Image (cartoon, rainbow, N blue to C red; front, side, top):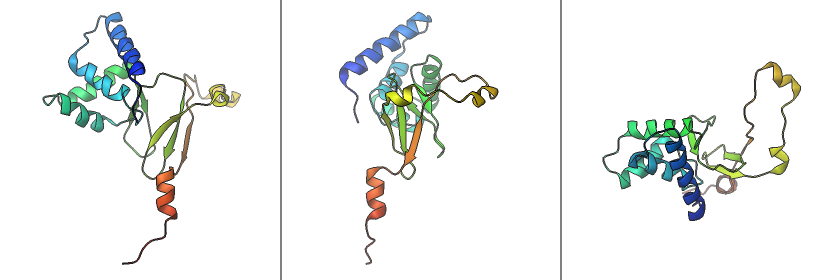
Length: 156
């Protein structure tokens, strides 16, 4: 799914401002890595970002993409979405949102909920430590995987 050009432009401006505000260079590689994550709602993993950016910058290295993603995460411009399935995925959506994750194909989609935005952890969690953010992850089967599971198997 694509993100609107208006939102990408707003995020690119925030990226440039964040870099300049810290006295850091706005490099072509960093810009393209951020543009790739900001331009999709797919929550790509680092390898997917590398493959897509490499189409535009053939000489870019995997290491440069991984370092750029870490840099963007440090700036707070992308968030790591850790899934139980392994590879971390990246999200540049800066709007309040939560995630729904398909346990079969790994698809991740954003959703909004004012009811969940107001979620406060129970007091018993205070003993664990300091909570910095709350993001809810719902898990299940996406419509495509659910339909595949329900479809009768054909014998050949």
